[in-house]
Amino acid sequence: MRKSILIILVIVFVFLLSGITCNFEKKNVVNAEEIKRWIDYLASDAMRGRANGSPEMVKASVWLSEKFKEAGLKPLLPGSEYVQNYTFTSRQRTIDERNVIGVIEGTDPMLKNRYIIITAHFDHIGISKGNSADSIYNGADDNASGTSTLLGIAKTIKKSGLKPGRSLIFAAFSGEEIGMRGSRYFVANAPVLLENIDFDINFEMTGHSEYLGRNNYYMTGCKVSNLDNLIGEYNKKSNWKLIDTIAVANRLFYSSDNIAFSRIFTNDGISSGIPSGTFATTAMAEYIHSPRDEGSLFDYDNMAGLVQYFSNLIIWLSENKSEVKFTDPAFTRIN
Ligand SMILES: [Zn+2]
Image (tube, rainbow, N blue to C red):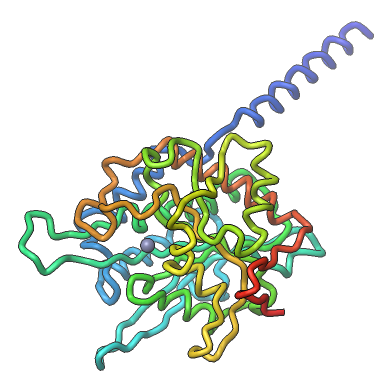
């Protein structure tokens, strides 16, 4: 009798141990094939470059809303189906625009009313007027890649049952290519108090690995805040590396939606001093804003690894008690 109990205990122990090992070995909840399918859709010729004001930009936003729902995100604006509508008027033409915004609520009672916002723009620049053989600017790396990275992170966190400490807002913006209209609108009309947003993690150009090598990425705005130092702490136990010697990274800090969070836009009548950075694997290659920006040369395995790495990093950051703050005196926190 006692022997049989012992045998059962040993079996249970081995079973549990194999479960634990499986959990540790479980990698890339969202795999390369799935990410490729998303990019193939967003950057297909049928999407005609997802220009602002085009039916294809609206189509992309509807597709994203469906993906947010499938992933199990909640709309940030209740009853909104994830869509934040806005308009933009240029040369007497009013364009209907839309951001897509979901949330994963935090679980730490002390931190859940604080937010990390994860962002990427999904619009691009449409079709060129020239007569070249390929006139469609597919915008695969700029920025179907960042959009898919954001979506992959949201899906990974929900599917793995990871519980963030802080709440996580996932915001896919339109209007970036016409002056960061979507992110600026979000900041000027934020559904949560801006002072409760601790920092922004923005994604652009994450499809290629041949520029920096696999498992490497860079961040714009290193040393503007202590965010890069905090990430460096996490990276000590990771096989991913933040490359902080990219010459153009300082300039690119001002060239994407992250700046709507960090800069104080006095002309919008708002202060948006929130630390931020854009994360990318390509430092403005010559194919950006050309019809050659297509997904055929992407390293989808590297992308899947990046999605898994950032999912774990964001969970770690969401539980971290350290304050993310500006270190560059040119920038000031809003509270
Ligand atoms: Zn872009």
